Length: 347
Ligand code: ADP
Ligand code: MG
Image: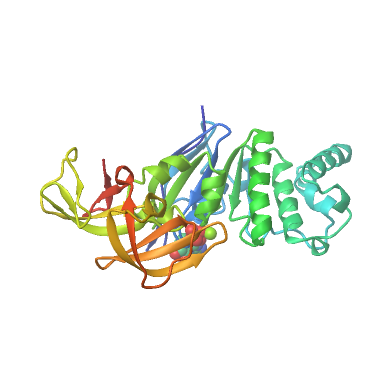
């Protein structure tokens, strides 16, 4: 059973087309991460689902009921915003209970549910405090709690971690996944951070310029990027994209053989080589000059120049000197070949 279904959803603001024919099906209890650069339409998509904007065309269904004509409060959709939007004059307890109070729940029911949510989120000690007395992470948890408390059919999180410091961001990723699993709820989490998407998602939807680029599991997007865009957006350090020429079934200048590929002879196209698929060792296949060596604690990232081509190599154990001559090899079976015209993957 699908839980949310978007059929050819488009949105324009005046002449500006922000979303172009988005079709998407979410499974029950799925955690979908919408990933994409700033301005690509992520927030607009969530706001359409929540009913905070009207569609220009298309339909939205929640559990087979069409909801795109309904008022936001009739949709049973909960949204958490980047800036939390807590009520500053209310205590944590009142903030958490607010959606139930609006729904005219009994006081005893509200108290019971607030206590349960507070204990689930580790906020029991903070119930009598105001948002200004809380840390960023605690405020974030109050915002999550306030969204959870009504038991929404779907849970929309718009970059909820981007105001937190790095440590807390990592911790809250796990926390959100835990909450989602504990509540057995469908969730859409929006981020522009590819590492966050990889670590949290059941599936990732990669958006660019208001269009879906690729939808799949984190592994599918990483290992089988369908386009240069996906390949470059996912992974750190960034994939090396190199313009090569196919000559007599050889990828030049590397000389990989392409027997199995159905490619016309003598064309130029981009290939992708992940930085972990290149290794430096003394009897490597190719010779290059080091242009930089960056220390990351657990690894060095070395940049080399091979025939005018810059390549990044990750996982290096030792520092290299600038201008040092090194030899390297490439794991040939893991290169990604793309079609130049549209930047799409060739199998
Ligand atoms: P993202 O969340 O991916 O950063 P948004 O969905 O906020 O992107 O915005 C997508 C595009 O739509 C941007 O170009 C933005 O300026 C534009 N936009 C968003 N909301 C409005 C609005 N209410 N009126 C006009 N343009 C808008
Ligand atoms: Mg946004």
